[in-house]
Length: 423
Image (tube, rainbow, N blue to C red; front, side, top):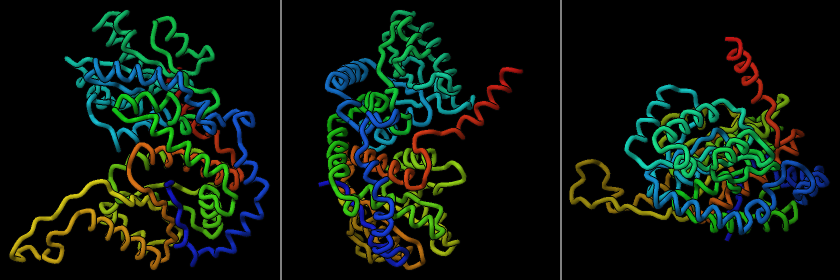
């Protein structure tokens, strides 16, 4: 069973005929995208999962993860954006906390850097530095700080055994440094951008260190891949999602909320925001991606969603099996006014809140799509990653932008580097 897209609740905003007409209008482009292979474009290395993470690489990653889980108290993941968002999404949802994972190199805050260093004292430390282009300031300087710390604490030879560098293996500066120092080197695929890299070595090592089955993750991705690449556009969930969101954009719905009723998905939403924001937000185009964790955010943004400007739509991640339960205790008297939910389960309450929210929002003029997820496991998270990556590829192509570049990200870097070099 795969994740399933339900777009029935947009019918009062976009007719089925409009969706069919849009598919027909863009059929040559859609079919070209669905036939994508790694030979077609430099940035499509993520499409073929067997090449992205072959058996030999998986075994290498699993062996290194076992070593880290046996020997480390703390595992520091140095990376920013696509270099850590995907793995963090899985770890925060499913990780077992056997090894404490600390995220560094994703900001320039001195407070954060001091807190990271304080957590390393008297702990056995391993580091994974991840960078496709090792010219990015945040991970670059953080790695300088942390490798200096490890070398002073353990000596250069032992420090090298505790450092894994995930780098572009094309004589990149990080690869050259890794070979010089003797680090374990893992490949950051040259034909995969950071936000599409979670199912490569970039994401797989940290995920495995957290005790999560990466084979199951990849199996889920492979299963949804076969569905996406075999179904006709009219029945294809990735196509229908991409076409529907672009049709909504044409009607003035230019903001999309990824909504969920499971807080464990909060970091997945951060990955999703980067995926669509960085892939589509260019040339004055794109849908603004944001997220809400319900029911908490119903008490902050719920009012705006229900009655504010009608320029937004929602995509709900619906966990069909929440995988947990907690029963409300029975009380003989109704002293607190909640007798009507006496002995009910939080699972029931959460599901009821989800159904009520979707109904109320649609009736309030908000188009709502739903992606039904059987349960929160590594298998289905693999499906979520691959589904949204392919849907984003389709959606951005329909929008007429290159999904794989991010020229705007370089703008602040150029100004910042110019300022730093002249100080």
